[in-house]
Length: 186
Image 1 (cartoon, rainbow, N blue to C red):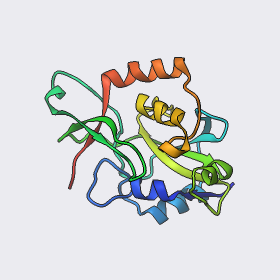
Image 2 (tube, helix red, strand yellow):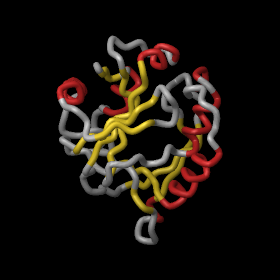
Image 3 (cartoon, rainbow, N blue to C red):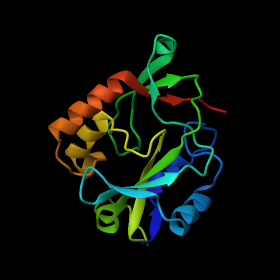
């Protein structure tokens, strides 16, 4: 199985001066590592074309999701943002000015070559990385509810074209009601 970083993932996971993204390795080093090392486990993703490859964290990357508490609630921020110039802005929220601990696992989210091509990101590999979930446990963090909605809108709106799974959406809403991502700059 060959794996390539998608153009989307390279931009989103390896920006300069963002501690909340992949740390301690370059995009090329990351790609080499996941091709040279077997994952601890492979989990089914939200659709047949999606898999999550579970690796023990070999980077300096920090946890993605942080519980919202009385101690950090005043640092919760929100804005309408688009991930790319083609997407419509959606409401996003995050905790600002905190630095969570190092993740124990990296769940590398991959789509098969056919799905990558359908989404307009051709790769020269069997699988393309579209994201990474830095976690404390070797299990998936629920998709953000807005990601589930965006996926249902289809490829033209930045999604994958997968219909909403009501139960998965409800579980995601329950998780993300109590958690947030975080941001800080160096």
